[in-house]
Image (cartoon, rainbow, N blue to C red; front, side, top):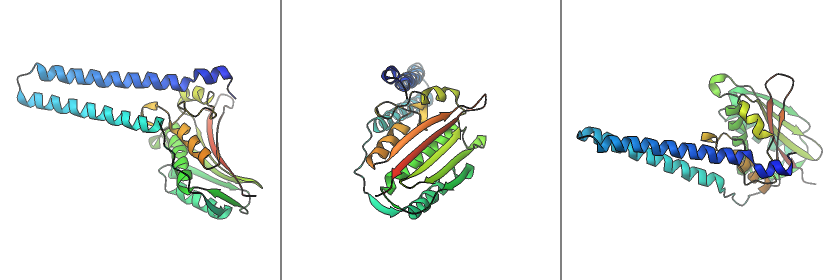
Length: 239
């Protein structure tokens, strides 16, 4: 568990600000280049192309900032909790994973019985799974790298647990994981989010909290090998 000092520092938030500043500066630099080209040319076609590039760059920057605002200020809908048997829940989880882009690289494991009943919101749980799987696919190097992803469904007498694991190809990500603490969900965390802004796991943790589940993360750093990142969602059974 991170110390209080580590939580206050929140390196994920610092990286977010640095990355955002870097991207906005790049966008502004590109606009300045296109504007200079347009203002210094008497060629109507060249001016037209430069203005089109300015419009595209500004539009892309606006869309990215809008998406970032939506991620940073996540609006979790009121959960629509449904009661279901563990066997049906497990079957639904497997079918959802099979539809994800990560599925061709997944090694599947299921342990424990299928007895018991739980309450969950299937749509919110699906959104959490999508984030964990997309994160695993990116963290393991992407589809072009033939990633190795492990998904496990574990059932016990009082809870069910879905776990997603993958080797961490990005060395910088290992340091971030050591500072994750979902008691403070406002700060960025590791994520598949474009540009490494990283609100994905924080958003997943908020969704998990809303349905009475718990998101946990850890890194297994064994010897000199590549460390593995594990994220899991635990739901209690109905007593």
